[in-house]
Length: 172
Image (cartoon, rainbow, N blue to C red; front, side, top):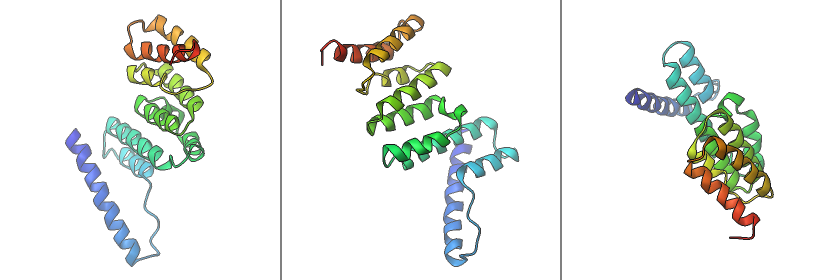
């Protein structure tokens, strides 16, 4: 399966290069399909399995998030266009939350993480919840305490609870 996915990526890269060359020679060509359009077409024609299509979609969204992350506003604008079903995927939510944190968007990152964890639990995502200093420390502590009732042995969650608690009580 990995070889097939790698082969598709290589094929897409070669096709993209060929299209670039043709566009230089024939400027009246219509624009090439977007990644999402190409992925939908391949899935529709049963050229790739649904699971592979979903993985490609997630990868495309993560890469687009990185490209759109010039600033918090551009990132937020792109995030609103990501389908809600994809926003709660752990890989997508982790990438988006990390990018928002890096740009000072702690509140957005926390919302993204809460939404994704409501759908599917991830220790790494729970750990990310405590990484950003925001003005919502008390709210985050309360949320972590609720999660701890369901995930009492989750190390990432324990770290996320400790970070805002230490800041809230005057530590660190």
